[in-house]
Length: 238
View 1 (cartoon, one colour):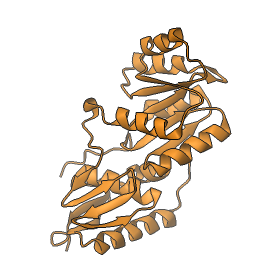
View 2 (cartoon, rainbow, N blue to C red):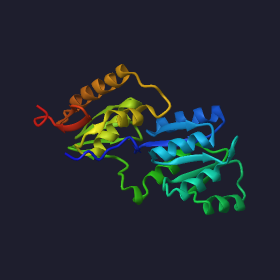
View 3 (cartoon, rainbow, N blue to C red):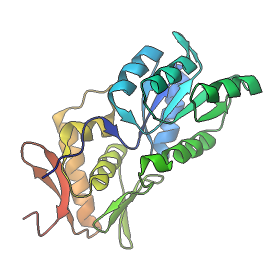
C-alpha cells in the first residue's frame, strides 16, 4: 500500500514570523479560533529552518524582524523554489513598500494595525489557491470537517473538535484512507515547537474515535501497525 504522507506536509498550519510576543500570541489565538493552527517564530533564521523542512500552507511574515527584513526570507524561499504563499505584515503602507514586497515574491500585503478577521480571511484565501489543490473543507467517506468552526460532520449530525483533534482530522481526511505517520499527525496538531507526550496524542485519538461514533460515521480510526493511523470503513477495519 502506498504511503504518500510525510512529516513535511502541514496542510492547515501556517508559519507566523513575528518578533512581538504579544502580537504573535493574539494572532495565534485569533487564527486558532478560525480553525487555522500556527507555528510562531521570533527570528528569520528560526523560521527559515522550519519552512525549509516542512510544507506550511501559508507563511505570514513581519518585515521588521530583529535579524533583518522579512522580505529577505521571502527571497530566500523563492530562490530555494519554496512556493509557500507569503503574506507580509508591516507598519509600512506606502505604495513603494507594497511593490517591493510583491517583487520579492510575496503574495499579499497587510499593514498594521489590522483586524484579525481580515487577516484570517486573507490567510484562507491564500490557502485556497488552486496550486495547492487542497479543499477548504476536506471530506472522505461521508465525513467532512469545517475548519472555520471546528465541526466534524456526517449527514445532518456534527460535533465540535478541540484544536488538536481538528488538525488530526484534517490530515486523516485529506489522506483519503491512506495511512498517516504518527509524527505527521503530532506535527499538524501541536506544531514543531512543542513536546508532545504520548498520553496527549492517545487522548486526542480516543476523543476523535468517540466523536466519529457520535455522528454515526461509517469510518473507524485504525492503527496501521508499524506506521501510523488511517480512516477506514468500519466493516473493513474489523
